[in-house]
Length: 351
Image 1 (cartoon, rainbow, N blue to C red):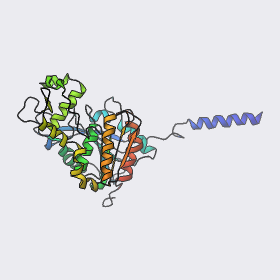
Image 2 (cartoon, one colour; image 1 turned 60 degrees about the vertical axis):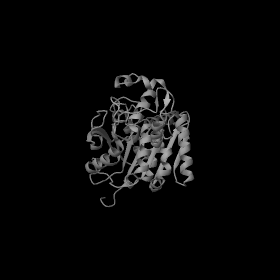
Image 3 (spheres, one colour; image 1 turned 30 degrees about the vertical axis):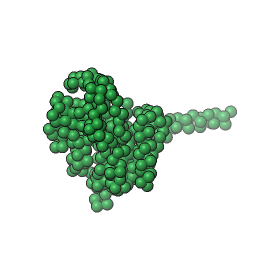
Image 4 (cartoon, one colour; image 1 turned 30 degrees about the horizontal axis):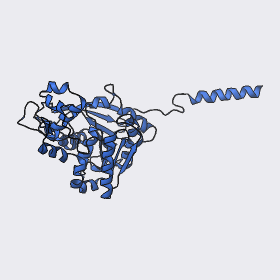
């Protein structure tokens, strides 16, 4: 009887210990999120009238405050269309919380500590598409030059390409590819999560486009009409066409060949050949998409084929999922490990 009682007491003690907070469960060490303003000279005077002072969310690792001599790699993470930085950093309710994902992965030993930086690219047309345009402002220059310089001057970064990565989801994935292939002297590693518009968009003779004459009309339009106007503002701006200051690829039901040519020229699938020399300078490139995200999955298959033909080493995967439902998991299990394995972890000149 005593033996049986002793057995149950030991079992109870074991179960109690297994559920004791901090005993078997991983203690999550939390980083810090700060939201700052960064002035973009590249964004001044844009015809949309969007502010040149942009919100920027910065995630600092848990050890940042307690280890003042340490310098960290930085990942510039670009958000998607209709989103902003606050949604991704837990400052607004959203379908994802990037700092929580990073905290857990780092605490569980699946990721190195890194700084993450995300500018607010929400514009009058709900997304900048991270392109240079007189209508939207020069977002490509702002991210690659001004924002990087600001972060290096104000935080303990590793201020060289080996210490910088760029990534993004959807519109942000497009931006990461567009900027990454042009600036291997600034970023060494690129990761794309369900990147939108890598391939030329479908130029449908959509009559809904003709119905949008003002910003108020735009705000009442459907999602895909909004995408078309955001792309037009970024890729086919027109100084002489107020109040929207853009040209559409279809007008009055007729294809506009000159505008469509501009759109095609702005897609990374089209520009891979032009920038292959730069792409080869990158240390690492990775991309993935869900199989239910059909058009985007197809576009990254094309990108995979192009890079393979050029014998560019890269990481590529189609997984079971949609445009958003597995993004938290992909960041945690794929993207963070990708950057942990490819970015410089310390600056030998400083540490």
